[in-house]
Length: 203
Ligand code: URA
Image 1: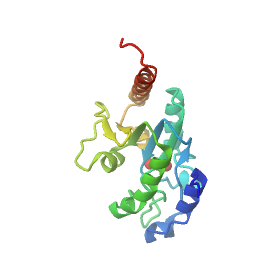
Image 2: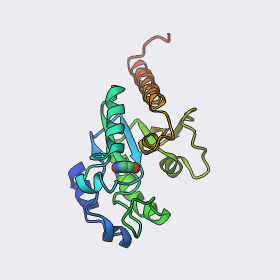
Image 3: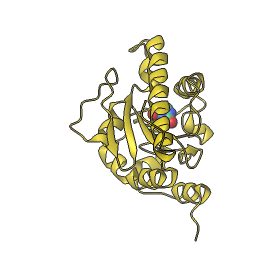
Image 4: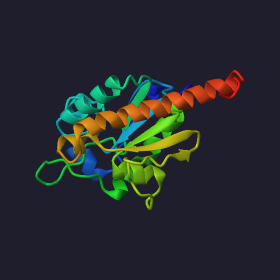
């Protein structure tokens, strides 16, 4: 059987691995975007006013608007956007909460299936939680000095989560520059691949 993005998404929508999330989610929110994609963005979990309503990660809320605007402004195309966890985690008062370690672990197989299908060149970890999950629990999260890590064929790249900027904890102009820098990394990598493929002379 050929596994397409649609079949992968359909299998995720049937997931009932986390009893607490099955109770509070409105829907499962699989990753979405271009396959294969040059860049995969990994957030935390769909928001209560965003993905949990729209069914699409980083859409319908301020985090989604900011992230998607930054990607467009930087001229980054071919993106796939997903999360560590595919259901909206809520506390007893119905507010967004961070996913538990067990919920992240349960959802890991879905993330790995998406990475295998999307085959990104760059995986951008939005926030320390995504960074530590993918780069390693002891890895320092410092987007001001991206320490690029290789993971399979992809480069792992740390960036602040858009929610951090929305809360005023990080300056929006610096965030624009971070996306420009990401774009430069992508261009450099693409050129290096082209140079190898075409055996261009070293400059
Ligand atoms: N929306 C998402 O899809 N993920 C986040 O981490 C935040 C908002």
